[in-house]
Image (cartoon, rainbow over all chains, first blue to last red; front, side):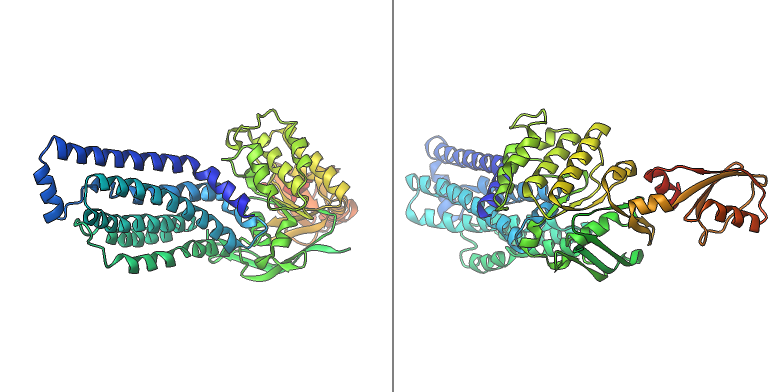
Amino acid sequence: MWKSMFYKEWIKIRLVFWLSLAIGAIAILGIYLNVRHSFIIANAHEFWDGIINKMYIYFNLFKFIPLGIGVIIGLAQFIPEVKQRRIKLTLHLPLNEEKAGLKMVIFGVICLVALYLTLFALLIFPGRYYFPYEVIALSASTVIPWFSAGLAAYFLTGMITIEPLWKYKVFYALLAFSFVHLFFQSPIAGAYKYAWLPFLGIILLMSMSILFSIYRFRKGEM
Amino acid sequence: MENIVECRNLTHYYGNKMVYEDLNFNIKKGSILGLLGKNGTGKTTTINILNGYLTPRSGECIILGENSKNLSPYVKSQIGYLIENHVQYAFMNIYQIEKFYSGFYPNWKREAYYDLMAKLKVTPKQKISTMSCGQRSQVALGLILAQDPELLVLDDFTMGLDPGYRRLFIDYLRNYAKAEGKTVFTTSHIIQDMERLIDECIVFDYNKVLVYMPVKEFMSTFKQFNFEVTNPDVEFEKGGLVENYEKIDSTIELYTYSRANEVESYLASLGIAYSNFREVPMTLEDAFIGLTGKY
């Protein structure tokens, strides 16, 4: 049953998955081309000064990409379910309704984590060619909240999409915007060094949020 | 005979709007029950309650021994459900959708599905979303046949189908249900199709059930009498002998469970002058419109 469920989910998101990977990789390529340009052609001294003294984030172009990926994977997964109320088919499968919902979410998280780890590796490891360990470690602690925001956005997108009533959708969307906004408050590298773990706890709690929308659907809120 | 479905005192409201109160019906094993009614009378509501997508305000539906609010995976595997408009996972093709569903049902009958698919002029990689409504209906039916459930719940299965596909669907379904002893609960807007399919019928009107009986009994007891009246302003009181009536100029179409002589006595007792009194043969659709009215 896991295999069948994952098969369906993969059919829904495979195009968006590869597209997300391609966009993320192209953005990272662009970032390092820009770094190379700054070192070789532009003013390397100014660039270093920005990174060391002003905590300048040299990969700012990447900032909203994990967030966009989280939203788009969520939409690709859950819009086909609400279109023509196909969620009824999923809930009619011979398995517990909550398990059916969670299996969908687990698959989405696996895909997101795979994408995020790949992009994280692509973003961080080539940096060692240009920067010392301290800059790379700071870069890692800077991007982790962005990936966390993407994960939160995925769960919230699922909950908002499955929610049957528009007024609740709008309410959840406002809450989601406020919460996700917290991850992008500071423009300084490493600003979330000590804050992202509590955020991650909240995000894990959010992973169950889709069950609430499924429960409301089954109660007949339409 | 064993009941596959038992609905007891079912009551549902949307906000303050009552759909129905104290609805009771059973579906016997091996029978085909049709739920007939105009738009908005509660047909899909009933199907949603049966499938556990809607919690009724009060009352309960017992399906294969379990309350529809909490169906176990086993009982769900014994219910084949066809959603209005033959909705399926349209982002899949006929090969992918069969592969997907087969993982959930241990007794999956792959041949039953592919036998039906062989009759469709579609390519194996053609997405369901690009198929015609008729072709989609066959995919949905094929999946239910492969699932081989005890109970088939079909919500307005004729919607969007041309006459050929409607006939194909009904003949295939009836032969299958009767040969395999399956129980079917179905709704449809197209009553003429139901006549070929169902054994028993429930007719819904707004907030009430008008009929719940075998189709043969309904068709043999419910009658239409036409006659011309001298006074075109004549009105009849509904209830009692008159179930419903329509007036077209001076012609009255009167619908009743009473016999011809009883109707004539009734007209005489009211002092109504009439002529050309005759019984008019009806199809199930005529009877449905006669009972529920044209508006």
